Length: 76
Image 1 (cartoon, one colour):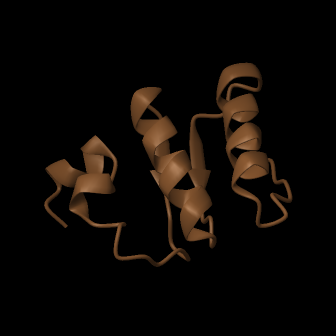
Image 2 (image 1 turned 120 degrees about the vertical axis):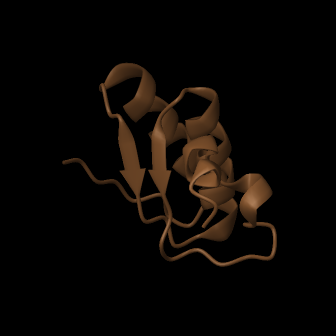
């Protein structure tokens, strides 16, 4: 398990997620309470075929179209 402080800044949060996925063999990211970061990391996770589970972020943009393909298949 790894953790980091994104300082509520989208560029920092996305950079951390990218580093974890590309350099540190992380396969899943959980709980990003900042909606802008969560949306960006969700998109990156889908592109890289990784898992993202957001539980704290809330935005009208976080609907089924923005969710990871595996989650859409569940028809949540």
